[in-house]
Amino acid sequence: MQTAGSTEAGAWPAAGADGRFRQACGEIVAGLEPERLTERLAELIDNVGAFVPELESHSEREEGDLFPLMSRYIGRETGPIAVMEYEHDQAKIRLQMFQDLARQAEDNAAEDRAKELAAYALQAHAILTEHFMKEENVLFPMAERILTPADKEQLARAFRL
Image (cartoon, rainbow, N blue to C red; front, side, top):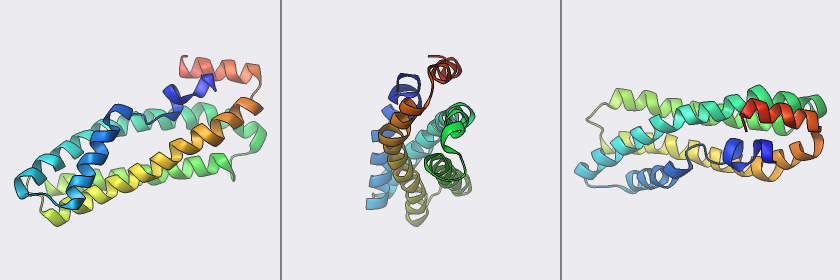
């Protein structure tokens, strides 16, 4: 749907950082020499820190604009909208856990702590990768079918398209 398509509401909010995000996580989980571990963990912390505000903006647009419009036709308590909101929450929880542990670890992150941090980031990444695929393949096509032209115009204004 043009009003909520992949470039605005559906793609990875930080698509350019996605590869670096996954690569840093994977390297940490696989095990690195201590000097590289600190460097990669710092990169991952920076990537997550940059990603979280973009995810918040993405979630707010959907939860504040798209979901209320769609819920007029399909409800919000169960079904696709409930799943999308649950996945937003689950990803945010894992990213918050990552950030909380990262603050506690400071500069002297042991290998086990770094792997634990990377695991939270990887879990959030997995949730969101599947989530964005569902948006593109289920939610947005459904919105295209059920929303009226007036609804779509309202959504375009809300997303500033």
